[in-house]
Image (cartoon, rainbow, N blue to C red; front, side, top):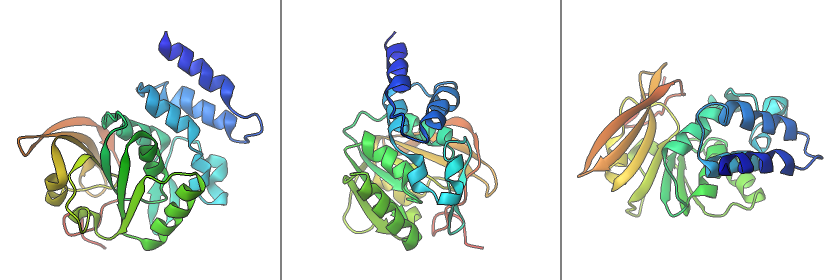
Length: 232
């Protein structure tokens, strides 16, 4: 019953002047709740954050289609379902400090920032980081720290232990520096496998070791770095 009440509230509360309201509600109903996204906090945030703000005008008419879209530099914004699924796998309560590898356009960053205490995010391309910072600032999101560099090497500088780590690009295996920066009891979500096809994996760190669980097949752009894939 609480889920039904929540759904109805979302369906009737959007601004009728919002040109993307119908597409956003369809995404919620069909691509998220219509599949296996059940976390009410994740569903709420996915309805609140304007995905169209993170992509170029030429792709904005397709902002709520359930597929990835180009964002420049050979990178993509992930499909809404995958963003919601990866976020849901992190089991966020709102108190966590989370590391994101691959800022991209900042859409996944924004979702995490709404659900975590603080987000640290690393991106290889400074141009993408700058754009993400501008968009998140315009949305009033301030609980994010940004870095430019090799995300496979972990957060640079000060030693931080993270409650959650989300890798938004394909890796051959969880990079050891990231495993080291994950707290015992913490969760790490990543697409793991070959360059062109991966399995979305959820890991829990216990006694300094990762226990894996397979989620689903997926396909992400590769994470280039010392502990990721080599550049072409």
